[in-house]
Amino acid sequence: MRLPIIKHTLGFIRENDADYIEECIQVLEHLTESSNIKDQEIDVIGELLSNFYGAIEVNEAINNGSTQKEALNDFMKRVQGSIDL
Image (tube, rainbow, N blue to C red):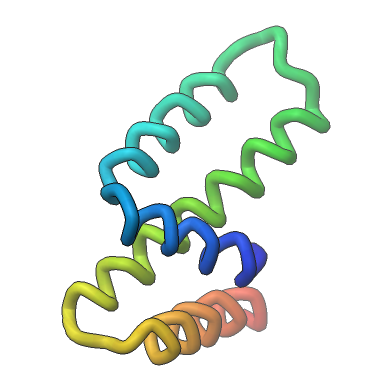
């Protein structure tokens, strides 16, 4: 996951709507089911999906009252905590 990508996606969500990102996630997940997708392409799609899911989660925290900075910090702490296990 890359914080700059998540922040940029949050900007898109603010200007538009989270529904666009959720629909994009559905399309990318559907693409991964194709037998014509190469492993390298799957890796790129997976990275995009993780960033989009992260942006959706951070956006929900913001909608629940957190500042963007707090939401991003909390999210990254959870991600790092899950990696350290």
